[in-house]
Length: 233
Image (cartoon, rainbow, N blue to C red):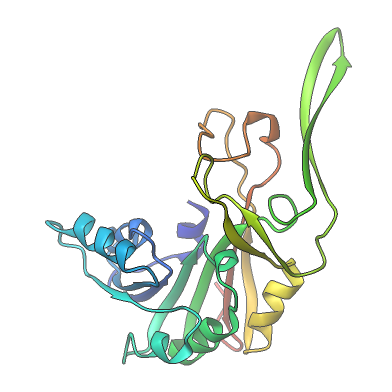
C-alpha cells in the first residue's frame, strides 16, 4: 500500500518495473491502468511472470534484462516513462548506479522513481541483533522487541534470507540511507516522498523475521525521488 500511495499511478501511464520477479507488482500496476514494461535477470522468473499473466488483459511486456547493465535497461523502452519502480530488490543488486543512470535517461521531466527496501536501520546488515525484553507494568508483564545494529554506516555484503526457510542464504548488499539516496542525488534526483510502514499486529508474519513483538519497528522503507525541477505533489 505504501508503494502504491507514493507511485500515485494514473490510467495510461507508462511504467518500468525493474527486478520484477514473478510480476506480482507489475500485475497490480496494470490492474490500475498502467502500461508496464517489466524486467528481471532471471529467465525463470520472467517465465513465471508471463505464465501468471496469461488470460488477463494486463498491458505488460516482460523481458530478461540485467539491472546492472545500463544499456540493457535503456533498450527496454524507446518512449519516455512516467515512472520507474523497484520493489524490494535494490539490496539484491551489487551495483545500483547503472539502473539509476538508466532511469534518469528514461523518465519524463515530471516522472518519478519509487522504490522499497528492507529498512537499513532496523532490518539489514551483519551485526544486527533482535532481542526481546520483559517489563513489569501495572501488574502485567509486557514483552517488547528491539533491535541493535552495529555496522550501519559501512556498505557491505552479507548473507541473508529473502524469506524464512529458503534453502540457501543469498548475498545481500547493505547501504545506509545516505549512501542509497546519495546515488540518486548524484544523478539529479531529489527526494519528495517517504514512508516507513508499520505492519499491523493482526497481520501474519510467516515470511518475516518481524513478528508481532516488533510491531512498532518498520521493517521496510519506501521512497519516491524525482528529477530535480519536477513539480512536487
